[in-house]
Image (tube, rainbow, N blue to C red; front, side, top):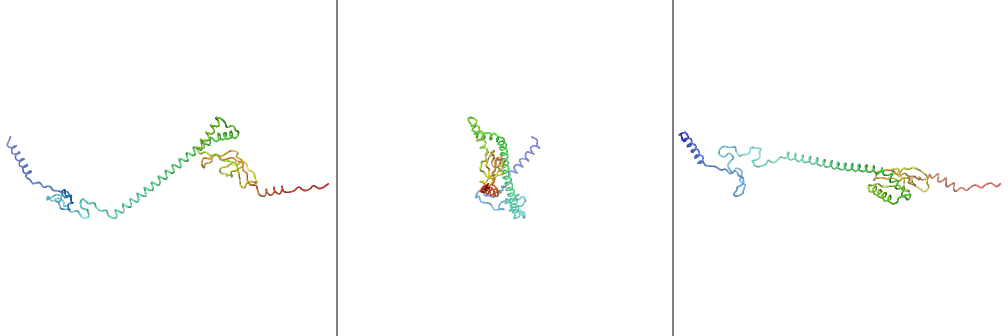
Length: 239
C-alpha cells in the first residue's frame, strides 16, 4: 500500500472516530407525555431548530398557535348559514318540480290509455248492437250465446258501460233526441223510447243514446183540450 493511500485511510478513520465521539441530542417534541399521559404545556420542550438558532415557536400576531384551528368569525358563520338556506330552498323546489312532473306523466299515461281503449271499443259497438238485437228476438242460443256473453264480459272489464232506458230524464250531454212529442203525464223532458243504447267509458261518452223524448204539454193546449172534451153538443132544431 502506498503512502498516500495510507494517509487517506488514516484521515477517514480519524473523521469516523470524531463523529462517534460527538454527543447525540434527542429532542422529544411529543405533546403527550408517554409516561404520565398528560398534555405537556406549550414551550416546555426545546424550540424547533434547537440551539442552532432556528425559527421561533412564538406564533405570529393574528394567527392561531400551531396545532389549533382558527375560530371562524361572525361574518363567515352568517355567510355559511345563508348558503345552507339557499341550497335547502333549491332542493325543495327541485323536489316539488319532480313530484309535479311524475303526476303529469302519470296523468298523460292514463289519458293515452283511455283514448286507445275508447278507440278499440268504439269499433266493437256494432257487434254489441247485433248481439242486443239477437237477444231481443230470442236468437241468442247455443255457442253464439257463450261467445256473446264472453265478449260482453270482456268489454265490461275494460270499463265499457251501456246506458239508456225508458223513463230516464233527457240529458243532451248523453242523449241524442231523434223524436219529440208532447205528453201530459210528464213534468220534464223524458226518454220514452230508446232506439239505440248509448255507451260510455268512465266519463267519456263513446256513443250517445238515441231516444224519443216526451216533453210537458203547453198548459194552454191542455186547457183547450179539456174545454173541448167537457163541451156538450148543441141540440139540433126540431123540424
